[in-house]
Image (tube, rainbow, N blue to C red; front, side, top):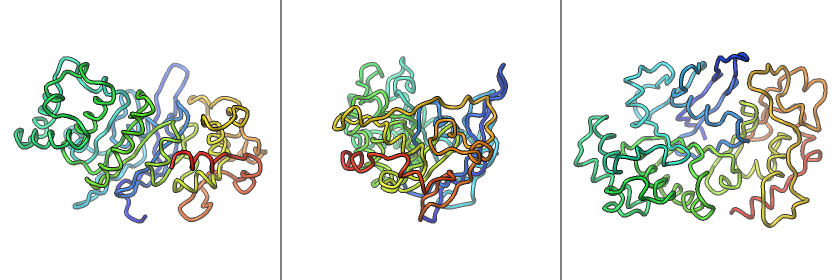
Length: 341
């Protein structure tokens, strides 16, 4: 993978509050490669959604975003996303990169029919309405929906799965290069989750999409993603191809997360919750953010934040003790991978 469509460097997001400054994304460096599916996974509250918003320069006030987010379109010069004007952002967010949020109901205006959502998107971007609505019908068919029924429906007249698929179709309306999906299946049942994942695989192949899929549901990503990056305490701590994470995770937190993943085929006593709590976003972290919960932590971990180190080809982890992690923190990676492939 040598063709990044996004390059993120030293990205930080912070909010000033009564208790001090909350740093909810910390020193993130990340490449997203063209036409890959990158999964970003971590516990709730780890900073995943803020990272997604920062990719679109969409962190709401009073949030502050610093660092660089560089988008490289198929043709033309690179775009510094954090330096775009409001007018430039309006075009960029739908025509180059689109976002699908958790809970489609909150993304649709409840008093507008679905057709009007498509129409207004086309109008806002000065697109031909007739041609655009024809594309909308085609997109709805591609996500296995009846265009005549869906376009004339209000959001509340559609099931949760239908609304989520309609939102995916809407996100593809202006032919963006990248789709960022923030917990898009969290409100759906297991069967619909798997259906959406299969649908995304088809859409990616058909439309040559780059997908950034954010979730706390690690098993959901094992079939869809090409690579996984694991987020903990507002930092990226491990990035690797999916199989490398499942079979050879290097960071103790990643290994603990795998062991904590619910699995109906595994005895309860073989699943282990991660002891302790996540750091407070207001707290200054001098050493490794995971050291209070890590069985391998020593004085070096308390004093020094470990750099991202190459564990193997395309596999990096921020841990001083990655060589000892497999013995200290055993995982059920083989069982998890086999169950979801």
